[in-house]
Image (cartoon, rainbow, N blue to C red; front, side, top):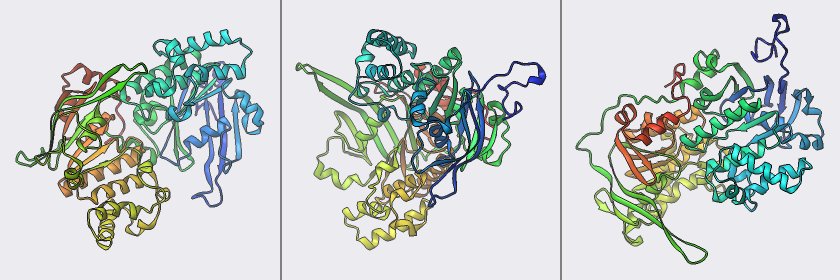
Length: 556
């Protein structure tokens, strides 16, 4: 790569001192199996990462972002092969390195932060021991020296009470704390290169902001080169020095962050950025004042009782005094951090969990404490679209069977249910003839459309979307959001939309409720709340949103 492509690689002609890239990828091509949808997962990709630089790889699912990351780490699936090109780590060609050499380089000279720390961490090992394992494998330090180094590293990633964190198991920590443990593991041996593969996707905005700030701090202090993989352009705007845009394995654009985000050159890049939702709520007509109220909660409460090992009893309040209202044709958004009570309210409203107190009025009928025998006929009125469509669908059943199962349980004939399923597939913009296929034969966005069709098959009055677009690419997310709005208007549904993404909430919600520690701290029309937040917690949420102050070129 020339110095013109990478501003951090110097040009000897202008008298600057040459800077050796930490990572240099040149002409990289990775072959797919013969039955793949294309010949290469990655085709002729070249870029550098300089010391102290953050390079973001962006693109839709299947673009090759994670394949590049795993190829650098030497962790490619057996079916994938590097067919051309070089991957140099501080001048050493990793493509030709043995497995033993790659194992030695991992952690010592390159480290990786994975997307989901709960699956990356060993659930039966204490967090401190997992970090210590890196030191015991790659250093000759004594046990006491290793322990002190681990505690210092835990403190350096801004975790409270290092001794307690050392002793804790992964399930005893929050998502943000687990991700910090992963960062500590990746950085404990001060590698020259840090690879972060979607490390903030599942985190709420304040935790996400903390993790991004931490990565930026560590990168600056240690002069670590960072290869950061994400589909969130807010994150890119927040931390990237340079951006590489990938489309189906080809690099279509590469340049400084401000240039790529502010004046993209390639049509694909412009399409991706145009799909980024704005923080500014659009003008939208208010729901009719005389529209019937589909859902109203009055002082809704949910309490959990936990019992200690020695018999102690503790009561935890997950939701307190929550009063909300949604009319037909209206979308109410609930935003807040993880643990704020958003999903608890959704589960209480749908009676997936018992309600501890208050009322839940569904079309005027209180279902809060209704016995199961009376509740069953009403369940079809409330349907949920969950965050992960792959886990929501039975992998062993065709999507058609998944869609018709609910209506048939309520007395609809199979022929009628199949006819309705075909209509719904067309409504969610999928081929009705695809009902015989299985979930793995669809993309993530298509699977989420199938989940929406399955929910609509019950002819609900209230549709609950619980983080339904948070795991989707920005372009697919835009399509699903537009689809949800279209369906809501077409079928006059009431919608409860739960999200930690403030941009999404701004675009789809009529009213918004901000939750913190189980309570609604602010509630009102989305434009009023976003333009003039009254509560300090709401203001802190907005300030933490990545890329909030960046003007994306042509963003929605």
